[in-house]
Image (cartoon, rainbow, N blue to C red):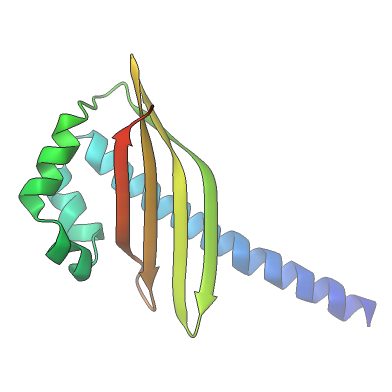
Length: 127
């Protein structure tokens, strides 16, 4: 009986850890594209179509440019939450992008069944 409990805990830790790792990887890939100035690809590859309907590519690109991020910027994620509800996976990632002389707060939400896409994004200068 104890062996089954231990096995169950190990499986749960691996599943949750794997989902958190996947979410952090998505956030990191997206953020690196944004920092590198590849905002068009970031928009096309990561944003959910419903979010794209609310936020035009031009507005997204302009908003990211206004943050003035450059090669000195490095992301750090301090909060990653993952969940599954009725077969739909979700992940919330929050943190900060530290650049020379400034910081940018970030918060992303990803959702999906097979592929996680961004359904919510917040990028703003840290207060």
